[in-house]
Image (cartoon, rainbow, N blue to C red; front, side, top):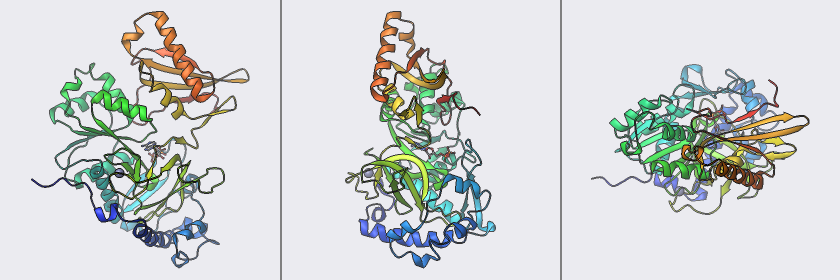
Length: 437
Ligand code: ADP
Ligand code: ZN
């Protein structure tokens, strides 16, 4: 029997800072060289950088202006393409729900590098070739499906490429093929658990050991709830299409934050208002620079995602720094009667109330001059059909806990399980009817 692999490349994953930074510098020079071949950066770097030779240390990163989502949109379709189109083997776009999609091209080498990062992530979380992996994320333009698929195959795992949705079929396959790993959004993990009985299955039918949950923000309480419901380990997986997709930052078996693969990305955390770096351990906006990508190099990309670097060393021995889970996006903050509220704060509170089920919605509207916040929560059916006065008590308890966390007084509505919208992919839980489209 072969020994269990715990690193893909121990030298690289546990390299000391100096070695890692030397590698990053090499990568940065390469990326700047590639970037200057693109229409967008040739124009955008004018007055800042003339050639890759202007990069002599990692500090020179500061000479480079930030790249924003709008820059990528304005570069649609090929403004950020550094290679010949004939060398490109695949393209992906972001979901494009908020405007023109952003396009990322990949050469074969880019795909191989991405695959390597995904394989590394799976190994870090304890997956082995003996696992059976059911990939419940959408395939196609969305990067979650293909990204995990290739990484898992490289590790020698049997992949069941179901894609998202069709819960009954997912459960049947999980049962029949003894699936041990799944990849899904946290919302879908909840949806599957709560509809399992309806489809004629129970937890005893499953052989699940781990779930990779990602694609959308979620709290530690949500993770715990998923782990308890299925009796498994759930690992947080973070990525974004602009940086390939999944395989950017991933939790190892210790679940103490997400290791950012720093041989492939430079991580910065900045104050979203001033653009200056925050102190280590403080929350700010994540900024990434690709270090190995040939076709679409991206320099200092403002992700709009908020997180903090976790100080100290991880017991796994990996030296690549860890980030906290994403606590929100700079663009998902709600301003309600002048107070700033992140949907993640609301989720954190709700998932800590044992009576609350797995689904909720956040509604913001206007009544006269004032904003109104309504939180709809599904509660377990036993309770719903119980004593009315108990429901009132519960309603007040949720309301009080929310007020203590977000400093505003919401209206709380309790709903029956299955009555709020369900999500097979990224959940859309906030409906802000103050915004006129
Ligand atoms: P889009 O921005 O169009 O949704 P992507 O599909 O690339 O494009 O989604 C990436 C975004 O999804 C990230 O920037 C982040 O906001 C969110 N996301 C992905 N994984 C996680 C995660 N594990 N935790 C929190 N948010 C996540
Ligand atoms: Zn670790």
